Length: 121
Length: 243
Image (cartoon, rainbow over all chains, first blue to last red; front, side, top):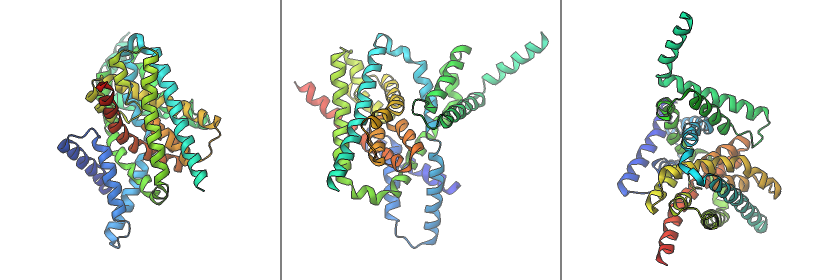
């Protein structure tokens, strides 16, 4: 498990370094995600026993970490509530705009994808 | 009286420690998660929303500053980075499926991302929102760190973007499913993709808790739309400022 945590942290570290190096607007963890994905794909057909066991370790640990994804949004969420005054007199209008655009984006995207899928099949 | 003084001194001591706020965060999340499970995963009983509510009430009632709270909560906040990296794992596991549907994914991504941005722009104009606030709202469907970077680039207010982005996540995760049910969309990958695209991490967490396939496509959409928004918003901004 410790090796897996090391690997995951290490990929984020590389991601942060690349972000800084090329001054990208993509956050380090997202770059780390892409790099880890590419590495896993690259190692898909490996026969090396050590790599296979390490891969399994990373997959199990990562899956376990993902169970707590929701929890990790609580600290920033509390910050949002404490700083709601930033929005001042815009608050209700902003809330309405977020509601309409977000719900309709979810609906439109899912609708497009499902219709395209049934059309092709 | 003596007892009360003693209790008070213990409280003064504890509330200065990060451990107290860390424990409070995990505890309130467990309460939120318990309610979510008891409600049979009803979307309005969002565990993130409940725990944010509990912690915020306590902080406001006890007059604790956010900085003091975050001193403890930062240990949880820190894990957001590594867990984002770990999203590579479910995507990897479904990679053959994703490759097969690459074209559909790409079209849905571009359409969804453009719609999220332009609908926000138009509605802000309609409600005559201040320019600065409008610019801060444009990238709100991207994951918070990306959205804040874009906002900074086009002249928005990054901290305002953080607020709007998190609200987008919570609203999408709580109400999105109703729209999907209303349209009778059954395909789990399409449902997840919509949730992740519009309401990033919090939508992904919601999708992940319901269905593995939905979770994978939500994570995929979260990553892809982060990148798409980072390209589209600055581009549109340049185009508009041209006229």
